[in-house]
Image (cartoon, rainbow over all chains, first blue to last red):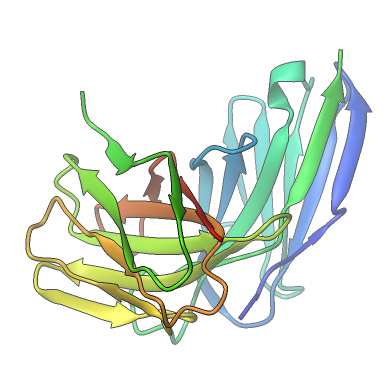
Length: 114
Length: 112
């Protein structure tokens, strides 16, 4: 079951511009996580934001969470060509039995042109 | 050098054969997970294990089996009962249920 829906599916920007990706989900969550995947590789964890948090920063990354709208956004500032990858949101849903199970969205493919 | 490893990177099998994908971690993590990723899609959970000698089915467990005899190892067997086994398989581990997951590099399985 896919809980997260990401928007846009694909994004192409110039180096130096900001990139914003959005994630919507359906059920209450314990936390929401963002991951990055380079083509043909494993996923790399970027940020985890808990349900009682509204915003988190990590370097050039900023994540917001609006539990009333069941949505999150990932902002990458001053993008670089090396940021080219697919970005996934994943939710740890309340009621998953405290198992740590994550439900992944289908991802946003970001291309940053040099 | 801590991490999570998967082998092999590419695997080719004939239809009707069972195949086992390896996943090993030296991060001392209790929880381990297997996901399947199809082209242009997100990840879907196959099986997960929170502790040695215990594992649960995920969303798409049919046609797959796992074991967790050691904390470091969580092999996945793709059986001949899996109707569409060709996919990219990712293993992950986590120190705790409410923490981030660490992924291996993946195994791309092609069945013809």
